[in-house]
Figure 1 (spheres, rainbow, N blue to C red):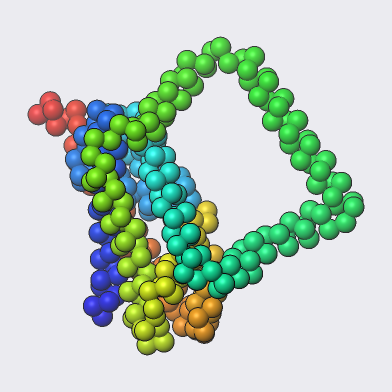
Figure 2: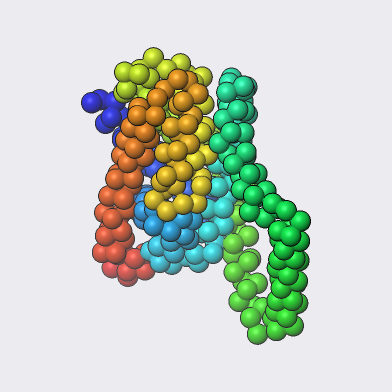
Length: 299
């Protein structure tokens, strides 16, 4: 249906704007990668994240670094700056969600996230005095081992200090590029578009089901917030499992049954996964067979 294609289109379009936003962060470092190189490295990173969560962030820096002859550590600093920006937006969205639907969202997080985590910690590590003593002993041992290895490494750091310092400096340079952006207006506009399209991808799928076709915006924001939090869980397959469980539980807040909730989660998550993996494969081939920057200059 048009709604399905529109939702899939939003997935593609927001990655386009992520690549454009990344280019803005790279300019203060003196790098001006082509859009195709930046976009391709980004999509390869997203594809890798489905297999090994968070490794994709490093992968895209390495991939673009090879094409542009730029240190991956500096590029990783810009990715950290991106993540800090998105974290700030997520906090604002959470605040908005609590404002428009406080009772439901507070109950949801308590019943499905904080409560179960607290229960597992209590049941597994502090169930009785014996388990509490063992847990505290293990934590003390871990703290001692960290202190021991840090102290030992500090005594043997002379040979590796220069390399480590260089990596830290390059990463910090990339991170501080955030403070040297020349076009803040465009950066903010791109960020708004990215998150706006994120919301549309979630909301348009809701409108595709007869049971949720008349979902109000406030409810859509709540489901979007829950799905965003779910996707941040570092699980293989793009938070597969956690996403489906939490989104289905979120829809139950508004009286939507598990069958429809699961169908929504599967179609929404599945369409994004197929598109991102397909684009990741295509973009990987592009990076593999296209010329590096030094080859283009020599020709």
